[in-house]
Length: 471
Ligand code: 5GP
Ligand code: MN
Ligand code: MN
Image (cartoon, rainbow, N blue to C red; front, side, top):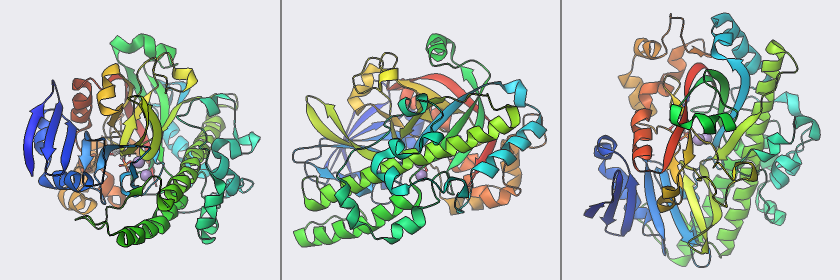
């Protein structure tokens, strides 16, 4: 399968596979852990015509059609778009809000339990709908992103400017391709978390000494309490994917295009099918960013209930890890797919949001409910990977294998249950979320070491979990 293997400096591997070139960013330990399946998937993905670049970040692991942890780039002119390399939860991403609180202000477990209860009141954590926001027009949100939200849900302008993108413009007439029942499911889902690995986590920061100045510029301080949110486009994005994947699959049959993996689907960007997918994908990105905004709005209500109505909770940043974005690189417009990969732009890069143009933006990387998560910043050298870094630790084993391997006792130990520093969880029984234990994921410190060693990004702060809310 691997025909040649070149190393470029630290942690950057270039692998020649039968169908093309794969770049891989990993330290020695992570590199050795990759099984043959991830290379097979890359080899299938590299058969998509006219690929310009494909890589894995160190959190890469097997997904449907394409590994999670893939960055793949095509030219806008004659390239392809692949829903398999966007992922099923279109627009899934991360968001962090800061608070003025210090770790010691919420060290008391009773306070943290009260916070969890208050958050659950405002943010339904399971499949239930959120009845608090019945005045939101879902159609306006999928068309206009954050600009489609009623003004009363936008605490201040900062909530619109500190995001990777607040709205995605597209041709709304493509929405007629979606089945009418999509509205029935989507209504009431804004501001809901969803199940599985989606979470709201209360964390405190440990600032890296070398980046203290940058942290201060971003409004961060040592010991600061922050809230990290992970969610996506709920059933809106799910349905866009399911409905439209069928259409592309039929078109591929019609065109006589085949791939060893029937789950890997793609279309030329300029084809009718490609254009329809891209336009509908934008509607899901609008839903996703608005969903995280509304979750954060609920979290703020909960904090204000406990700490006073004047407590501010500014957005640090909101960014996505499942999308295909048109970006200008190497003097031409490219379609950059990131499936389980995070953009980390360096200081001064023109693609940065205005507020982060000078410093580069915070790249938000979750770990697990029992380990550190990270706030990073991109480096100029990230250009070699189209400024993509990891999107988390990445799953190390399936849900089933995790349940077989890890005991509830071990899970409790990793959450320091019974100690002062216990990481509190909303679920009464850990058994029900055993497949989400830290042991289900790769060692996040190794993943971050891989990224830092490859000079793709640097660590600004570690985020230590204090309370986790899972769907
Ligand atoms: P994905 O987007 O692939 O569903 O998951 C992103 C990443 O989130 C995972 O690879 C994992 O590292 C991280 N993650 C999953 N659950 C939790 C959690 O409860 N807390 C934190 N901090 N990270 C998590
Ligand atoms: Mn998701
Ligand atoms: Mn995700």
